[in-house]
Image (tube, rainbow, N blue to C red):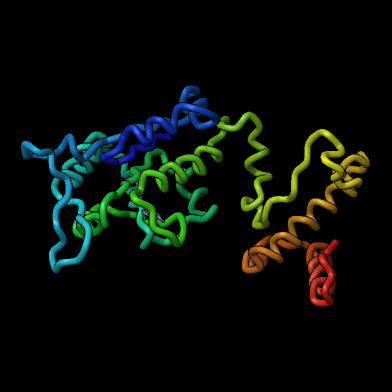
Length: 252
Ligand code: ADE
């Protein structure tokens, strides 16, 4: 898969793409991450990419011309392929694992990272196939959100993780939150690893993990339970957990 990021800070993207699993996925050729700097498409001596907003207000707006020219030339280079053109903005629809899965099936995606107050809306209207937010908070630009998308998509590309099953097992992937994890030593500062995990009893471990995932989801993100894939056994466990929590218990 190819990802092209439009940003006036290409070094931010490039630096984050070198280390770790992302860096090795790129090295293995599983995905490529290119950057395009709209500043390279300016026509004035000062290489200006922003201007004051019509109608007044604080902050600057990214001018339409440099970014449009950058997008036009990258689109022309795509030939027949029609990449998804994703603008990162706090006003977009919230990123979730379904969207990540959808993007991971594309051959090529463009991620457009705005800076300043935002991007001239005529560019958004002309080019955006998607507008995505990574959460209800405002960052100084779309570069970190673009990296969030890249990382989440990369994890789903076959061969990117040493063990593809580990993406399948990811919490949100299955609709529930992550279970608590433990490694050695068995006792740390007087705190013991849950007995069941060292029992070697696979069925008991599976049940314990499922119950913990249900409990965490019920406590922290109950709305996820509405669309999660729940078995009869899960529903029974949830009823017990709710009863216990309602009567002042901790779900232990
Ligand atoms: N740009 C600035 N803040 C953002 C956010 N929360 N999501 C996506 N893009 C952004």
